[in-house]
Length: 368
Ligand SMILES: *[C@@H]1O[C@H](CO)[C@@H](O)[C@H](O)[C@H]1NC(C)=O
Ligand SMILES: *[C@@H]1O[C@H](CO)[C@@H](O)[C@H](O)[C@H]1NC(C)=O
Ligand SMILES: *[C@@H]1O[C@H](CO)[C@@H](O)[C@H](O)[C@H]1NC(C)=O
Image (cartoon, rainbow, N blue to C red):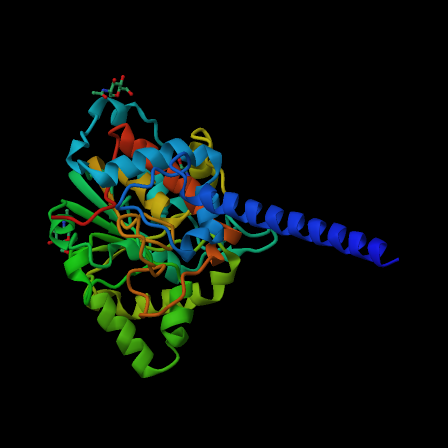
């Protein structure tokens, strides 16, 4: 009896040990997966930390990312100066009719016309008012405009501490996204702004729908800083911006004369823009504002440098945690909310490919 119990105990112990060793073997393998040179050439400058295991890093580890990450690592290790502009490749791209897609014009709409929204159900409509029509440009603001060197500045936290400001300011034309602030960040992001996008929902989020005199003053003063630039207002992408668009239109009708700002109101352009990117195998539910700005720039510029395009929560040079936006308050958690609609890692992959081909220059390190 005792002998049987002993034998049984031994068997149970053996099984337990076996299970335990199996578990540790699996977790060991998992760890080596993240650090093995096969998946990510683990040079001294690319480090790994908890953030790397987050969901987007997992996307980044997608097998199709492996050649990319190897190339990226080489790039960061050594000679970023190796990048050469390939004019042939740049001009080989084909484009949408950007000047007409850039903005609706007075002649392209009539009062009472019902607009739909690119990303909303067809049932939602927006009636073009006299006031809105009065704010439309007579001709496309970029008709016959061409620049030799453009910078497109995304809002990624990778710009923090980059000292890229002076380099960005050397561009002839600087594109920015979502009314991003430059004032306290100019060392890293530059001062110059020639175009910034303005989603009407910004009024809701940052200016209390312009409900108080103070909100209106704040907004007015921030617009003043942009004088000479183009405000690019995508009002017909989402029906949720319909109400704030009316507030915005009223504000501009009142203050247009005091503000030397050019307004541009793109119509329903996303169908054509999406079609273009689909030919490059990129078809997310929604393209990011950043890649949309690059799309515009590609028809207006001879050469394009991209800054602040890096959708991951860790610095590729140091491995340190990054905020989502360069202007986020310290301690703001990297957000993954964009994953519901955007495919920033796929966009990044494509832009990095263009960088490797010399079509654009993607800045991922500090500027000297
Ligand atoms: C530039 O791009 C063209 C077209 O994509 C390609 O045929 C050519 O080899 C590239 N030149 C260099 C120097 O990479
Ligand atoms: C955008 O450009 C395409 C041509 O590439 C044109 O067919 C379309 O009408 C334009 N869309 C708008 C809203 O101007
Ligand atoms: C771009 O904006 C800067 C001011 O931010 C201005 O000095 C410059 O003339 C503008 N360039 C163009 C091409 O509009």
